[in-house]
Image (tube, rainbow, N blue to C red; front, side, top):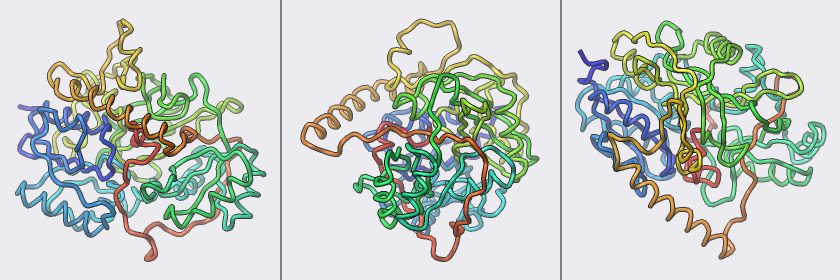
Amino acid sequence: MPLLDIRVPAVLLRIDRNPFHHGTLGAVRSLGRTGVEVHVVADLAGSPVRGSRYVTRLHLPPPPGATTAEIAATLRRVAARIARPAVLIPMDDASAVAVGRLREELTPSYLLPRQPGALAERVADKAELAAVCAAVDVPHPVTVIPDSAAQAAGAAWQLGLPVVAKWSRPWLLPTGRGLRSTVVVRSMREARELYARAEDAGSRLLLQEFLPPGPGRDWFFHGYVDRTGAVRGGGPGRKLHAWPRGAGLTAVGRWTPHAQVQALAERLTGELGYRGILDLDFRRCGTTGRYHLLDFNPRPGAQFRLFCDTAGLDVVRALHLDLTHRPLPDGSPLPGREFVVENYAPLTVLRPTRVRRELAWHASDDRGPGRAMWGLWCRHVSHRLVDRLRGGHPRQDPEVRPRVVRQAPPPAVPSPLSPSAPPVPPVPLSANEVGGAAGS
């Protein structure tokens, strides 16, 4: 009997326009290799993913700036074409939030985890996450939510410059405005000016204390929480190299057992009653040694294939098995296994190694994406260089993580599901996502 129920197709939904999101390819391959039909609802123009032999069919994504209703209409159209229930897997935060809002409407056509209320949206919202961590006693950076430009300048000074500035709902950021989900603020004036752009950003500005990166400080945890509350299909990993260096997505990651990170992840999901796939980011404070939660992504992380055990289980397969009521196999972890993203860490690929390694783009059974990636990537990089030479947008600080020296609950913020909350538009290819930084 096949590992997965191949009678049940999978639909991957990705709203943002990042053509180099290797996590989407990982999900296509993970399911396609078992014989499951894989439908992709995303803009894959200029993306290596469209060349995978495991893509059953591409579907047009929601239009740019789509409302929640338009996203629902797109998914209904796809469901009508497939004509049988399918497992729906959001591949970015914008998709996860939209699917969470539409769960009741989508359940006749799609199989989804029984997620409590608006929990996915709550943990994806940076302001809400700070309150969640305070409530369940999980270390998180002290977070200040200013109500005026003057408060933003004062908070930056009190936290100690430089500080980290984040928009609470990064999936609402518009394209072409020069706004990034996370930046380093180095002066009170910068904090004041950034606050003035809150209306453009579509969500509230957060200021957090800065935690410098360092060797062995960046960790992540991937997992799938099944209907019983057990965490399966993942584990803790250490970020060996990042792109941009010391700040961005995982270019090289290693499966590394870590009892404290594992315990924090399991305690957090247990307290919240979370169900489904998750991707958590932690950073260890060099002063206190505590591991602080920086991000909670309610969807697969881009490097989820790192955690493929001896039974072939990863978080995407665990989701499909659980939602189709099949038993999850009991495999053993493979500590030391590495995941490498070739276009961000080419030298690592060239170095000989004896460790078990999976590449993001190249695979012996699916050569199309790997061949296409280098040509498309070189073209992408050359276009960016030309833009800079012509006086395009200046290079911005790479995404960084906040430093935490104490725990404190942030001020209350309006619920992201309030009647005044703006609709969920697609997240376009922004400056911090050009190389695939989204969904790290």
